Length: 303
Image (cartoon, rainbow, N blue to C red; front, top):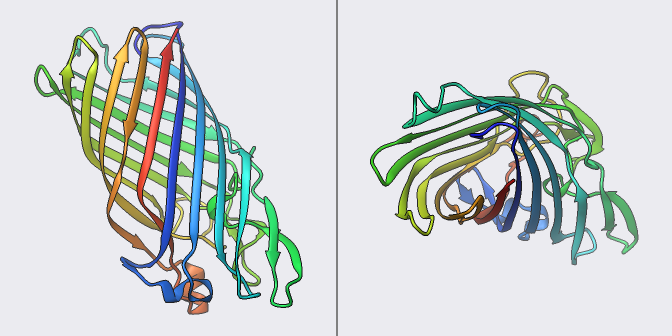
């Protein structure tokens, strides 16, 4: 965010595909609906605009777009696919670097706070097939819904520090607080509506400058994405899929003349799909699909 009264455009693409049902830390396809695997495919594009109010204070507005498909067996004994796509929940975040860049050229730490608005449709519906082959419109799976139906408070932190002339370290953390407990949207469990869960993500690692003249660098480190069993504030009722995925994330960056391109492919190395409070109450095994890897690509332009 160095430099005041400047703008920066970010376009980030994210892809994931999942085809195995996990309960706890292990694959357990028998616990999936009708004992058959689910296929989840998600493509998302976030368009963000940064504005530097000062050298150390910045604002970021993010418009997320996504399209997802969810394929599974239904009561008619056949596999069917449902989908949802469009604008998701818009967010606005303010962040500030704590130290003067001139006095601390080797490292800095930024803290941010923002709001997530319920602009995405959290009740997107598609055709569902019943045992008598009739078709009804029902909400699609929570994993491909365009929003969660609630306002959220975003807390984030990021830091970087120089280790040597070519090596540096980085750390990022992001947590979404959701005061709303649940919505009126029906979940896969009869009589249970969807929860509005907290969400978090953390990254830690190091980067290495391969060529300063060409602006090429590589990075590597762990990444943790998850949904907690209980929210920090608000209630915990409703349907959610708590758990976490631990990835190792290799990446590469090309930066030239105010523009940069990034590509990373986080590879999952550990996971834990926990039973939710509703699963425990109803004696359900819980679980859900997880992606073996993610594809993340980004473009930034400072102007």
